[in-house]
Image 1 (cartoon, rainbow, N blue to C red):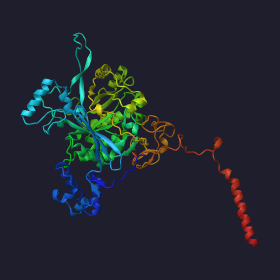
Image 2: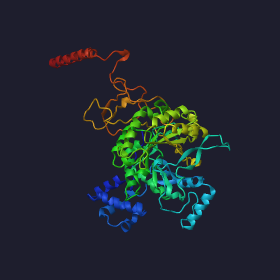
Image 3: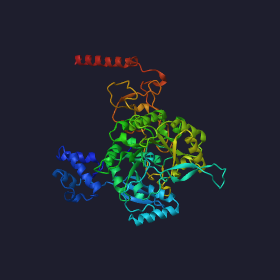
Image 4: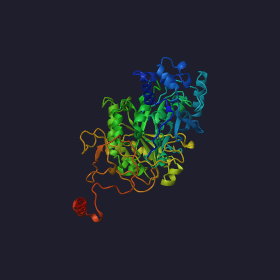
Length: 575
């Protein structure tokens, strides 16, 4: 199972824990107000010395001061044990050590540095000189002084650097219409503009230690799921990141499946959008998911989650192919995932009030890791285009980033540049907007699918979650939250999660169909322990040889028992 964790001292940035402590101390109904006052000083005034809280945070309840000064809470339960910088200055990967000795990785990504490098040298020099003359400081890549003016980021990219494709002659031949990848990002058509990397800094945050989804191209999946992070630990990553670069956007694309740790991720997102704390726009916070369908439905009903951007790890246009790449696809059919995502996006667009093509239109970012000889053929590209045709979607094609641990197990290789170009063009012929992601930090292992903490292994498997409203329960009409019985979740024999040996099988119905038996249960995201045997227990007990148990087989024992009782009574009377 994933590790059950109790942090001592507790993370101060975890609002629910702090408010509970204030209430227990007798602060009263104003407990949350005092907590938010403290958070405003921490995030907006960079207050970090709890021993001087009375001097720097005036107006708190006396008992709130007592809680803060008691040592029950610390500003950060984690620490940055290593920071690795990409050679081009585009990314900084942080190795964060948690209080209980576990570690996670998260990444600061400077998109402005990427844009600046893509410009001709004369343009770089021109705008660097203009910035210096206007007092904006040195515009070296990734090392700008702080500037606060708004950048022109396309909301469609959800905080991910994306490059367009163009058709142009190559090799000096006027008749050669070979399609090539453009060297310019999607915003490069907006000239003139200044590039200051901190204006485009996006933070890739982790939500779990490891991951139970075991996507075959992802290094994090080789760890298995070790533990869920608390909301405080997620926010502590933000606290650490701000020391390297002001953060303008957040993507939950680090270690873990965000929707598998739903409550903590939503609590952290609530703090991120709170104007008294980080004050980020919900559109600048992206939740990346392999497609836990019930959690997508929960997201659409959550007061914060329903406004966040969503990125779907698609990777294949058909159920069969997707199951080869994403093991959880067997529990979450692609058609249901897309239906849930479509409903969320339509809701974000006012259920049709924002028309297709409008500049305020919200879209889902469909992520597609393209792997040589797996999902990179023209046929697959056309299937992908047909699948996404007419949907509010932006397809983000990501060439596979090699990782030794993954490549050794799978043999996966990145496709050629020409293959990517042909794939993208085939999808675009179906009227789908396609971007090719410009990866950052490959040289330090911080690109998509490369985050991993060596030597850490988990043993849990993601248990398929089931919305009560999706499949009616045959056992209880009053059940408010239902999940499949533990007997309905099958496992293939062998290996730990992440190794690719164990697979998540679809739930079985009572009659062997896809209908799911349900029962009232605690929240469905709880991990399932591995069964002691690969053979699941049967509901109807049978004796060896296939004969059913019969009450008549107990008759001889009953007769013997009666004879003993009669004998005892006769013996007692003789005495």
